[in-house]
Amino acid sequence: SGTLYIVATPIGNLEDFSPRAASILSRVSVIAAEDTRHSGRLLQHLGIRKPMMALHDHNERDKAGLVLDKLAASQDVALISDAGTPLISDPGYVLVREARARGFRVSPVPGACALVAALSAAGLPTDRFLFEGFLSAKQGARKAALERLAGESATLVFYESPHRIVDTVREIERVMGAERELVLARELTKTFETFYAGAASRVGDELEADPHGSRGEFVVMVHGVSDAESAMGKVEIDRVLGILLKELP
Ligand code: SAM
Image (cartoon, rainbow, N blue to C red; front, side):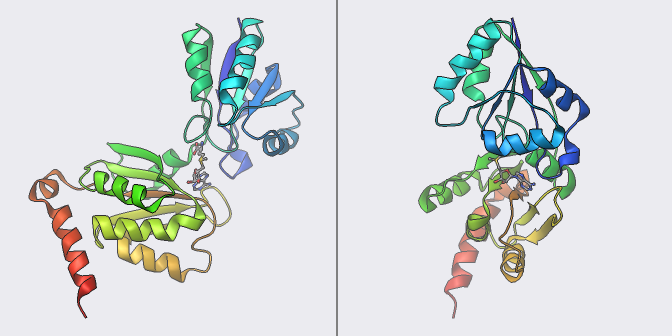
């Protein structure tokens, strides 16, 4: 039977596409892509012409069946997403799970992944980290998630869209305290790659002052609390202090 290749694509800089990834894409029978028009441009840049099929969050259950049929007919298939590694806040889970359940070979072709790239250069502890994907777009749910994570000792990692980045940083500041250390990685591997680092309140101010601050794509990383701090309830103290300070005239 065929192999399902899970192929990472660049998160900005096209030179991050590996020669092996290119050779796999030119060898498979069909490429399943999140957005065929978007990925079509990458393939054109690479000089690869292949039949493509769309596989995204809204049709993954239906389209997974078609991919499994191809694997059963001994055809190799590659799965790619718009940017970075498939399945990392991107479609593909249903397909990979199903392909494995049916005994097909599933093989990764690693490459760019925004969360790993961000962590590797942020200067925050990387021995333990907790990737939380995107926070909810709803304010109440976002706040609840941050409250649940406020006492976590591992480094926290989030993806965030440009139009919510300032709100998210301010919410982290409110829930986890103005002094909590944050690092934002913006536009990784692209021309305007920028890191913002420091206390939550300062990062928020810097972002708001920067005319390009809320443009582009972001990875948000938050320093975890030390075990001693969480035992002392320092997170809670900081949070209450923050609220009190805001209320002072
Ligand atoms: N699968 C991708 C990966 O491996 O990183 C992530 C896909 S997710 C739909 C898109 C999010 O990833 C963006 O909203 C942003 O948070 C993050 N991201 C992607 N490219 C980025 C970049 N060049 N710089 C910073 N963040 C990026």
